[in-house]
Image: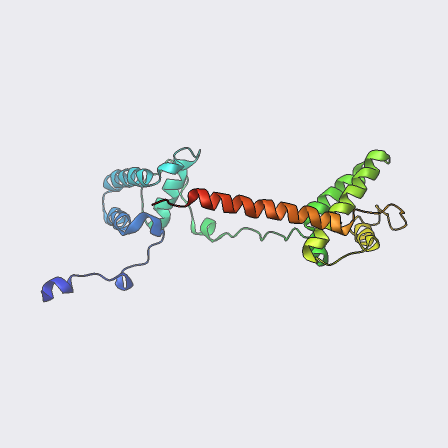
Length: 216
């Protein structure tokens, strides 16, 4: 019994798996291939391992560079120690150490985050339109949407002049409705639409839940 327990391996004592998704048995196969002295044997084992890896990732078979990915992963899991012929360029330590440039946060006006980024896109489009009834209608549509978004964030009330001021700032001064006599939609009307949509959504979820309940 003692001899059997001495042969047990614990994960804490095993080597680190570079790509755990493939499991320890595949890692041992790669280590065995690396240890072979004959390059012909290493090439044979490498192709066999690639075949096994492909069978373990059937959902990637439609990817255009599927084989390239498998060979890259093979060399990475061998810690770049496997000396075998590959139909693709072998990855290098320099390639693996490269890091992508951090993505810039797309929000240009962080103090007006409650309007969302789509509002800024709509404003930019409106600025490209020629003056006329269509552009005027779009500007007031944007203003009403801003008012609705504002009420989502603060469900109290908001004056039209506040919305017009924010629109003026977000448009870089190109859309100026601050002196407009036309009023936006009433707060009660906007909130009513929101409550109606919210109640419909809750009702739909409730009906789906009832349909999905098990009957005994």
